[in-house]
Image 1 (tube, one colour):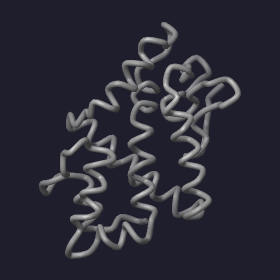
Image 2 (cartoon, rainbow, N blue to C red):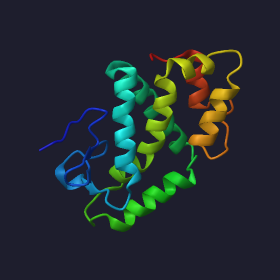
Image 3 (tube, rainbow, N blue to C red):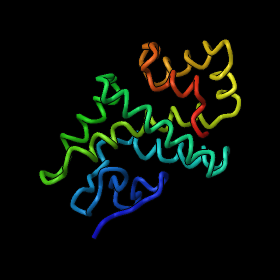
Image 4 (cartoon, helix red, strand yellow):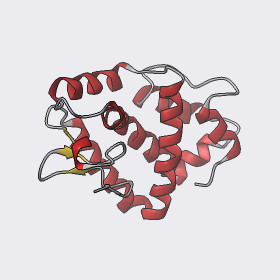
Length: 165
């Protein structure tokens, strides 16, 4: 049995399980009981959908997911994400794979970035000639003081090209 979910159906709140990205089968699901920030992020995600409408949030989530995973692939592992991963790894069942643990640990950063990307106010600042306030928000809330720079940074690429959001 393969699991398919939407961007906002990433946890089972009744069972305290990660059912989002990386969980192709029930055996891949993992307990999130050691990480109360994941259910809190899920509630924040649902609130973003209510404020920004589902389609805009879905597009912002996919953009943010792409950016965050590219940061992860480029070795931009922030301590917050690493701490969530460590908490999940400590409490995970032996059979759980690494993919859902990484996805669950990145989820708070993805949703926080999606909140900024989905917001017309913040997106306008991001795409302006003076994006410093937007970059400060990202630096403060997600990247722990690091500011996305360089031509190959995925956030800079989104900012300059305005991916489909």
